[in-house]
Amino acid sequence: MKFLDQAKVYIRSGDGGAGSVSFRREKYIEFGGPDGGDGGRGGDVWIETVAGLNTLIDYRYQQHFKAKTGTHGMGRNRNGARGADVTLKVPAGTQVFAEDNETLICDLTTVGERHRIAAGGNGGFGNAYFKSSVNQAPRHANPGLPGEELTIWLRLKLIADAGLVGLPNAGKSTFLASVTRARPKIADYPFTTLHPGLGVAKVDDAEFVIADIPGLIEGAHEGVGIGDRFLGHVERTSILLHLVSAMEEDVGKAYRTVRRELEAYGHGISEKPEIVALSQIDTLAGEARAEKLAELAAAAGVEPLALSSVSGEGMTEALRRMRAEIAGFTASPDADDHDDDDDDAPVSSGDRTERRV
Image 1: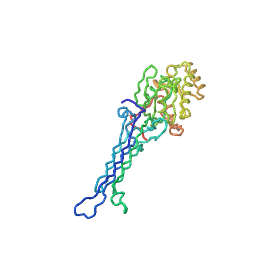
Image 2: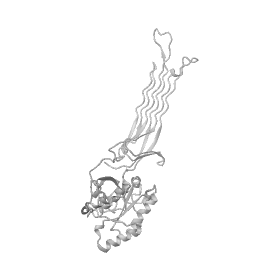
Image 3: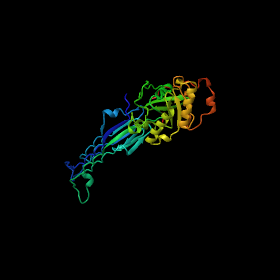
Image 4: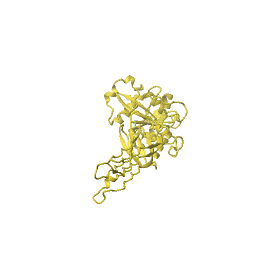
């Protein structure tokens, strides 16, 4: 299944049914009179989050959705039936924007959440409604009100607890593959990752969701490279893991480049708690490792972690720090004391099709 995180959709709610003009004409009934029924209400257009979806790919092949028109009123005071509703099913984390792609209509974050996007038109009154002492034989009825039509944008922002950021080839996909059962594409050339990916990591019996997005390069906020459009998928995260490759000639510059792009994007991403890590540390030894760590510490202003997804060095420590930040508490010393021999071993968990919310 292809990943699609934005779609443009045309929707139209149903028109109301027209009222009926009718008169009783029954044998042996002395007095007749108007008996036209009301028209039925047009169908609504709803949007609902459902489990088991993580992409908007369905809306690549169908972009027009129209609810049914209400049934017209009939004689013998029979009212028309209501038109059938239309429901757009989307994954949790979907935002609905107006046609300008800026005005937010609703933000659906939990499974089962519903929102009415367009209301159906009211049905018209039949001539029986207009009967009065001074107008005992009205010969007119109301037409149904038209439904609403509009174009909306659906924009998916994955719901994850932690997000991975960094330059291309910083080791983000390798990290995700090492600590979860996700299987992103991994290769030794830039922009291997073209679409965001999710994985569920487990450490000390606690699970959390990690999002991996395509790498950022200088000028991403202006559309350079893949751009920054996928940064929306880490807007909802509690913490960022910023990976800087140990193979970068200037690790300080690599760190600052990504930070500038996060600040230029805005939406509060640059203000999120951040864990800085020097990845692919297995490629360095001795003085070279110490120099790179010192350079990165000077640029970031914090002591970075040393990570290797290949050897497993520092992986459990990174997961525990991420878990502690997500849970809003400091990991207990007891949790760090046990299984010291396995501290550097990557931890994986089973697949999940959806995040518990």
